[in-house]
Amino acid sequence: MGDDTLDLLKGTLDVLVLKALTWGPRHGYAVARWIDDATRGALQVEEGALYHALHRLEKRGWLASEWGVSESNRRAKYYTLTAVGRRQLATQTATWTRYAEAVFAALRTA
Image 1: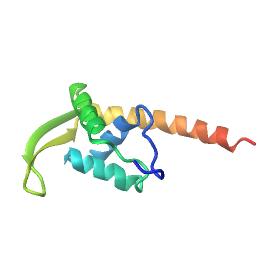
Image 2: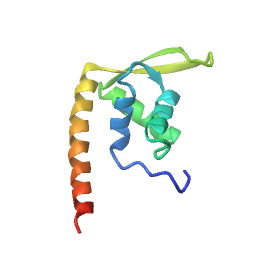
Image 3: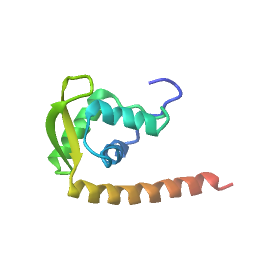
Image 4: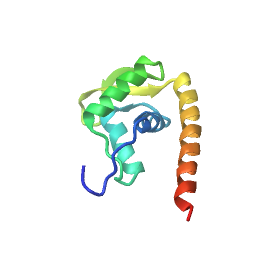
């Protein structure tokens, strides 16, 4: 990671992965690319951390997966958000919003 990128805070990766899948199935590389694009390059996910998160979220029932073929004609595992995952995304989004608002309030204090 370069000096102009931020390290992912603990727990942030899960909510970003869930959000990345709200528009339909994606393989791991596409999830990482979405996070990079959505954060304008400020957050970059290391491959090992991403695949660990994808497997963990699948184990929790928040994601489902199936094998398919990528845009580059390679075999890839595609992840899909489950109904339970959508509910979890809503919960985590609310939690992160409250957290961020609290931090911003503290930072704005003179």
